[in-house]
Image (cartoon, rainbow, N blue to C red; front, side):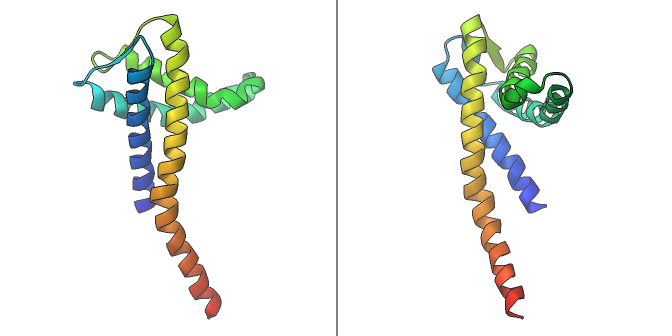
Length: 137
């Protein structure tokens, strides 16, 4: 259960960082302070729910885009968040092209790095220690 909660925390934190970087770097992307928390939560939930759905659709109908599933999921999740009032506003074609790239890259790297730092280091040591203990018996 702790690993699951840490995974959620890593997803929320990497989504928050990704959205903030997109707001900072991509012209046409604006993240309002008041809607920031809602945007992060909705984006993270949309990523989690839409990812497997889009993967299943791509496998069935467009196997050529399987490598870009993360980008497609990020684009659709950004669209979902931008439709809600308040949080995230994306204006212009360039912003719609660059924002998913930036958010996908930052969230992927953030999840990988934070996941390693928080989950693997914490549970990896315990799993490794339990393996040593059981092998000595």
